[in-house]
Image (cartoon, rainbow, N blue to C red):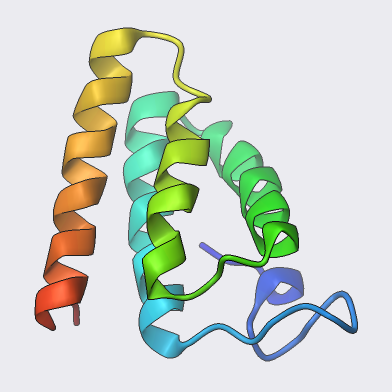
Length: 101
């Protein structure tokens, strides 16, 4: 879950972009998926990756693939990494087709 400090409505840095609500929802879903693979300590790691992703500035819907890839690099087991990416990419495909709720 995105904490208040990472909320699109409470920027922690004056140049932090506001995120579209659909992007925020997908980030939260991808983070939950990441924790399934990494374990409970993955929440903190996902927050760090999220901060770096924000700083990179590719925060629109098309930039979500960069976020997924950044998280996948944290998984050291190739099978887990591939499985995570496939499931996360499926979430992104739903976003592109307008099915993310």
